[in-house]
Image (cartoon, rainbow, N blue to C red; front, side, top):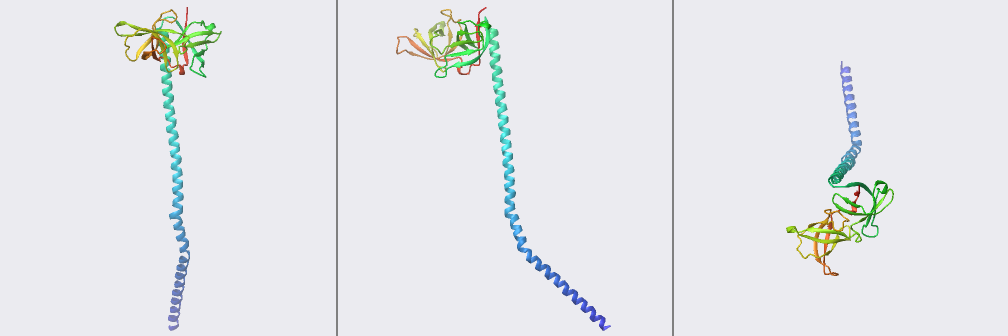
Length: 262
C-alpha cells in the first residue's frame, strides 16, 4: 500500500516537473522571439503604414489626373459647341443677307490672303469667270463691304480689300437733322481705316455709322463700311480726316459674297 502511495507521489512530481519544463521552455521561446515580433510590429507601424500611404497617395493622384482629364475634355466639348453655334449663326446671317439684298450674290470661299509682309490688301476666292464673276464686281459679307474684284481666272478671283487706298470708296455719315458728312475711304489697316477729304465742319456724334454713298456708281449706296470713331484736322490738307473702325473683320474672312450681274 505504501509502495503504491510512493509511486503516485513520484508520478505527480514528475508531471509537475514536466509541466514546469514545458512552461519554462514556452516562456523561453516566447522571450526568444519577442525581439522579432517587436521588430515586426515596428515595421508594420512605421514602414508598412508609409508604404500603404504612398500607395494610397499614388492612387489618389492617379484619380486626380483622370478627373482633370475629364474636366478638360468637358471644357473642350463646350468650346466645340460654342464654335459650332457661332459658325451656324454666321451662316444664318449670310443666308439672310443673300435673300434680303437685291441682285445675285455668289458665295465664294476664301483660299488665301495677301498680307504676309504688311496689312492685308487682297484675298483670293474659289469662284472665277466660269461661275460668272467679272472684274469690278463688289464683294461683301453680312457685316459690310469687303472690296472689289480686281482680277479673275476661270476658277478663282482676287479681291482688292477696302484696306487698300487705291480703291477710294465714296462714303457718307448720316448726321442729325438729315444732313450727311461725306468723304472718301482711303485704305488703312485691318483695325483702322481712314476717311479723307471731309469738307463738312459739322459736329459728328460719337460712333456714327459709315456707309457707301453710291456716288460715282461703283459701289451701291447703303453698304456698311464701319464706325466713325473721330474726326480731326488733316495736317496735310485743309480738309478733315476721320478714323473708321471697319465693319468687317478682315483677319478672319472665311467666305464672301460677290455680286454677279444678271
